Image (cartoon, rainbow, N blue to C red; front, top):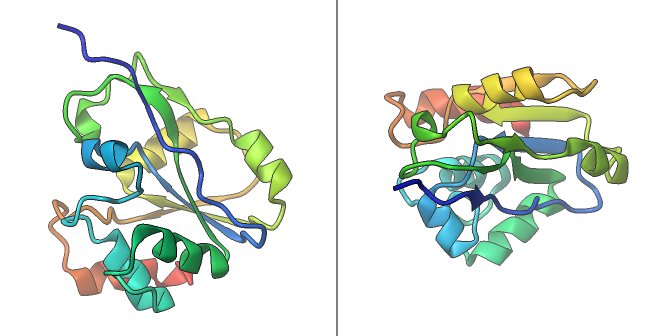
Length: 160
C-alpha cells in the first residue's frame, strides 16, 4: 500500500520576522496537532524556552506568539511528501515538493538569517531552494540525536 501524500504546516511568521528556522517536514504528531514540534521528545521548545524565555508549558499559541514577538519565524523545507512514520530518512524524495520561499521573503524582507534544524533539512534546502540568504545548519532538535542539550543549546545560541 502506498502512503498517502502528506502536506506540511503553514509558516508561522509575524510582521517583525528577522530569523527563519526551518525543519524538514512535521512529524506525524505535529501534523495531527497542527503544531510545530508537537512531539515532547523533541527539544525545540526547550531550546526556545532557554533562548527567548518562552515558557515550554505555555499553550501552543502563546509559545508561537512569544517567538514571533522575538522576530522568529518557523516553517519547513518540504511542502508535501509521502513518508512512513516520522523519520526524515523515510521521506520518499521522489514524491517531495519544497515550499515556495519567494513569496515569504517578499512579504517579510526583514528575514535576513536562516537557521536549518538538522542535516536532512539543510541538505534539502541547499539542493532545492534558491535564495540569497545564507543558511546555517544547526544540530537537530530531535531527542533522537545523541547530543547533550547543553551542546545543542551552545550551537543554537546564534538564533537569538
